[in-house]
Amino acid sequence: MDHQSVGLIARKIEESGIATLCLGSCRDIMAQVHSPRSVFLDYPLGRQCGPPHNADLQRRILRDSLTVLTSAAGPGAVADLVYKWSEPFTWETHCRDIEEMLREENASNRVWFPKA
Image 1: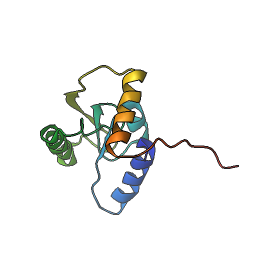
Image 2 (image 1 turned 180 degrees about the vertical axis):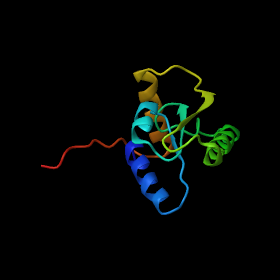
Image 3 (image 1 turned 90 degrees about the vertical axis):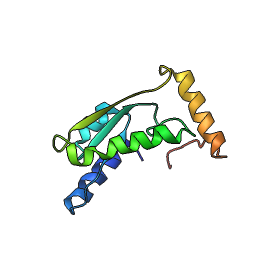
Image 4 (image 1 turned 30 degrees about the vertical axis):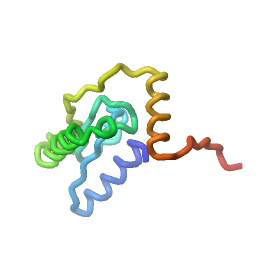
């Protein structure tokens, strides 16, 4: 799901009294959607919890994210985590990361075509 869909779903879940937290890497979209509580990581799309096979870092990110459930400034606030990705974003690294994820999941890239 994309950031906007998750944010809108979180708002509906919150209306029923269940606390939610959105973890994402598109800060501008997260700010526009006004999810009840959001955490931003400056990480590549699809890698919000860190690189694969780095369980220690992934646990730290999740623990730090969950503290926002009780410390969020208010609805729509986006908390920034200080973690930094190991290399700058480029389309080449993005495509490489996508290929790596597909390989790890033994999946193939799907091409989307609109319905006629």
